[in-house]
Image (tube, rainbow, N blue to C red; front, side, top):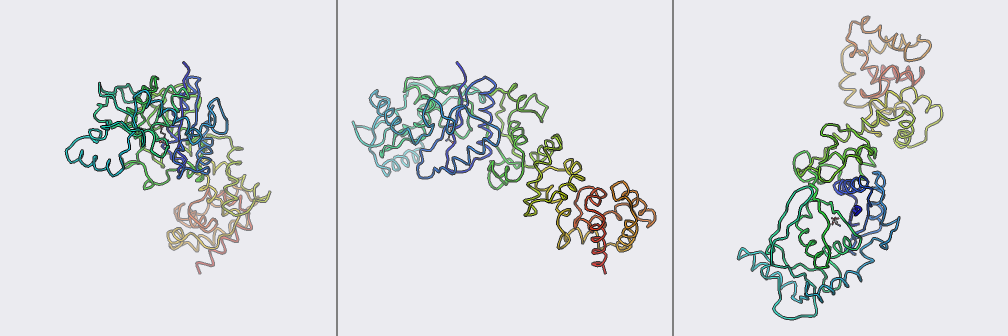
Length: 473
Ligand code: GLU
């Protein structure tokens, strides 16, 4: 039987990195087995679901490099793959379960149920103890699944191993509300059955729902899929990943200039490992090696710092042409205008050096801003740290004098001249070059100095050195 797996996002918010990682594992599993990866939209919550969120989620997983074989936008043999289009089907399933005796109508009010819950709680009993099995025949109200009491629900989870739930710990849960809307349990299970899902790999937070889904599947006359409950993502402080840790939406990383291939690699490496040591690997390598059975059951830490490091690795490894193509829009965005052809040529003089040092594209764009725009003021911290030291005025005077004579104006000759200064002024190299850097670029963080000055051009370099000299008084 060929593998059929799915990702089932609820379009009630943007795509969370944890959900993206679960989607990625499903996709890898499908691709490894030559199976089918399905996206279905869990939009039973009609109030909170929106088309905008659906698009955001789909665009985000496409950006990550995941494609799907059946689902919205691509179609497939099962209609729209949207739960909101299948309410009739869920009602039909619920009614047939009533007919077969597996489910029953329950017209107790919410207040009555709450009372029963509290009664159970005060007696230290599971709510199911009172909620299940109404004492009379009913034909209206919500439909509940009747939980068989003849033994535990046992299954072999690919990640967690054997899992067992006692029937008294599972309440007779609602599958169809009295207003005729399906619950998540009914819609999800019906879809998994109808779409022929063979493996359900999803977040561990859904583990308590799984015995319900298994019983429902069996009541429908089917065999349940294989389950794999993936450990949740944690922040570096060991707490469940949340806004508190920074960005949790995949699109925030996209907007912050992360590369999809770095994100893919990083997420694939959370709770799964290629061979126990290789951290940087291609999609093809991951597909070839991936198995749900090798996913760790320990929580995985999502560390934006490591992700940024990995992003830098990918930037360094890419062809220079691709780097130029990727960085250009970030530079233009930072400047608020397009680059002129001669400016682009000048950027080419520092581009390889920038590529080598970049972790994030927007950071790099900021660091080359000095090439294309005069800064209004100096970076405050850089100025205070560097320009207030003794001897800075002398350094600038001597640099101006020496640089005026440099010919031709290129990095080699600039460097040759500048290297004379420390000995002549009897100062350390950093003491000489840092003030020049702040004067020329406005900050103490910039691409390598001599290439930066070469790219900036003689006139602008000298102009800026003189300006800084004036500011010193
Ligand atoms: N819509 C559910 C969620 O977003 C899907 C859970 C499942 O995979 O069954 O959590």
